[in-house]
Length: 450
Image (cartoon, rainbow, N blue to C red; front, side, top):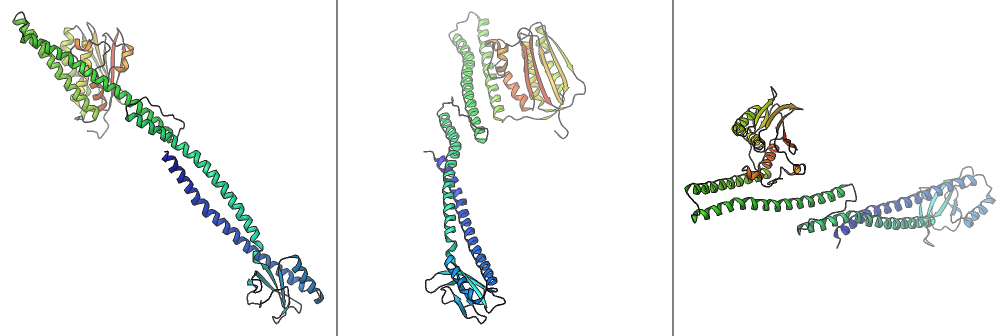
């Protein structure tokens, strides 16, 4: 049952009736009052007209004049002398000249109601002339107007019903489509598409529903991939640990040196698992917004120098030269120096790991009120098809690459989250065989920031 359709349609119709009925009543009252006023004015005008005529006609002509009025119109006439006595009348009985020259009178013989108007006759022996107009004289036109208004109201009601039907359908159909889509999504069916037929709020809501379905599908796929990746990444070190533990337990080693080698592998894999779990925990806290940062005013060049010192020894062993080009008098940034160092350490470590007999540049400059840090290496580079995904958890274009260098596959995902938490941005440029460049931008600290 389309309850939205009936509720919306019923509401519109009730609103329309609330407007139409009082409006029709008011219009009928206006026309009725207009007819009454018009009849009073017409009667007064005729009384004045006959008073003018009677002032100049002879007495012998008065009776034919009265009979002519009686025969040709539904009006009645009465003439009184200066003393107020009735001289001539057209069948009006029981009427006595009142103090007011305008009013209503009901004939006791036939209960006919009249509107009368009296006027003094000047220059003759006649005192006053009264014209009586039947009060139902205008009833026919009033009835016609009422009928016209009634028919107009019926037509307006039908038009309103048609408009209500179309409008209600127009509003309720997208809502029904979104309801069906929501029910499908609750059942896990995320391949839904709500038609976007308008550019108003309903169209925007339909578009948002489609975006939500796509995001939920992407989230589900990412979650499945995440669980699969975590299972795979944990299974590998666990297999190593279990295998070498079995070898130690069964004493399947040649000598003490090989035994120590087995122990070292177990220790290394356990350490790797511990790092992976720690990284996952930190990444989860970052994405949930529960990751504390100790923001302070930081000289970014100091953080760069500390990071460079950490990786210098390993770079030297691989015959990789480190160079820096830091602009002087750079403004401060608002950041957590420890987490900032963690970002640069990760990027520099990657640059050293994936380079051999090459060079790593660190460039720091001020561009458009942002501090830009560019870390470039001459390593193996990243394939073009892999670039959009390198900041995703566990994503690797070469599946064994991170394991060869002891990585967890989470370093770049953590670096991206930490950068964005400190109001920065990170981008990557790479060409296979020629190297990779990571570009980070942090806004300079404004006055008053601490």
